[in-house]
Image (cartoon, rainbow, N blue to C red; front, side):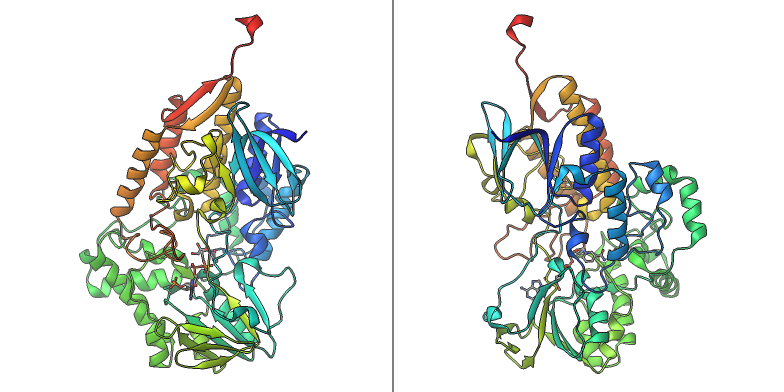
Amino acid sequence: MADEFDVVIVGAGLAGMQMLHEVRMVGLTAKVFEAGGGAGGTWYWNRYPGARCDVESLEYSYQFSEVLQQEWEWTRRYADQAEIMRYISHVVETFDLARDIRFHTRVEAMTYEETTARWTVQTDSAGEVVAKFVIMATGCLSEPNVPYIPGVETFAGDVLHTGRWPQDPVDFTGKRVGVIGTGSSGVQAIPLIARQAAELVVFQRTPAYTLPAVDEPLDPELQAAIKADYRGFRARNNEVPTAGLSRFPTNPNSVFLFSTKERDAILEHNWNRGGPLMLRAFGDLLVDSAANEVVAEFVRNKIRQIVTDPEVAAKLTPTHVIGCKRICLSDGYYETYNRVNVRLVDIKRHPIEEITPTTARTGEDSHDLDMLVFATGYDAITGALSRIDIRGRAGLSLQEAWSDGPRTYLGLGVSGFPNLFIMTGPGSPSVLTNVLVAIHQHATWIGECLKHMTDNDIRTMEATPEAEQNWGDHVRDLAEQTLLSSCGSWYLGANIPGKTPVFMPLVGFPDYAKKCAEIASAGYPGFAFQYDPVPVNQS
Ligand code: NAP
């Protein structure tokens, strides 16, 4: 007989960890399955040099426990991977989470049984278990995108991916290293690899807008001031569309209300302050392409000023809308291209055609390499979900249900898949927010929903097709009011060949959170319920 739990949670990243805590608070039993050897999800795997959060530490942290948020002391404005892993270990120990987590265990399939209204969850190494509820905490950036390049399997040196970095540090000393990809991971790793390697060849397809992070030791006075009213600080952040950085409100005015000199002063200030504040410089920069161009050109000029070789600067200069792909943060990224041991190769003009045991060959040139690093990102938001064979009512697979792009109600539920919840899924603000806030909002909402169902003998809960359709229209309408879907980004799945391009995250956290709360207090309209049969002797 398979073990039975009230809840199975898939993934022990930051979402799965809080979800386990919330499930326990409701008094239900839970089992968490995690493919990695420890908790932490993306932070467990992303050990590449330079890996650092691009959300400020005091915000990229849990808020479900006042004791926890008071006792933990962050040391940097932006925590690096090692500091975040120390925090994760502290949370796992403090809340005794590990006893309900099975590590090194990948969920391969799950099937909904109509007669019992239970999910059977199959794993690769722990057999199968049965649960009333399944919660997918599989992460938005957890399924690496490893593009196939002919001959890559013949390469003699190490081939690494930033999102599956080895547990032990990698030594680049004396090596000729190739890095493919210049998104958030690439721009963080490149300056550090360049300092160690004998030679670094960067293979760039699309140049990114990379802004200075301005990472620095965290000001103890700022930390103390925020802790004096952490609850108020979190509440103010929740009122911001991206659920964070309420200390730096967006300038509500149009760029065109300012003289050129005034605009430059605002942009210079935001550049020097660091972080994603550039996108808060003017109220219209993410909705008006002319306004956007002003900000984009400011950053392009910075690149031309920093990079000494004008040809290299031109290759590094992006042309797309700033902000439609996620902004990258890195200290010293553009300066790296002034080093004599660094070479930039434009693989949009001349793609890598072949990898041999010792080279990467483009149509133009051949590059001798000892190590190859893929910084090529993820099959984002839906990738980890679509790799599990999830079968709902009548054997319908989630992959089939989503063949024209993901469809959800509130990002949380899917029609045809009763009692299955998705955390930070498509149709929710997820990656457009400080994801720790998105996780908190989903974990607490799902926790309350589980309590409601348990208290009211509700057997199943399932999004209705109408609610799902209307929600999908709403997500699309909001995205179309911005410039966010105007370039081929992973928000749309455009980085994955064959993936149906649909803008997946929902724009605007505060309205979303209010809507979810309203739906819960109104008895969950848009979800259909079935009730447990009343036992015969009580009827
Ligand atoms: P990414 O932003 O998707 O960047 C991947 C890079 O690889 C891009 O330059 C992309 O070029 C290139 N690429 C993809 N497929 C390719 C192919 N077939 N051939 C050649 N080049 C290819 O991935 P990422 O850098 O791992 O970052 C993903 C997200 O994770 C970020 O946007 C961010 O949300 C998160 N992240 C955050 C941090 C942080 O907190 N600081 C750090 C790392 C990651 P194209 O642009 O042309 O597709």
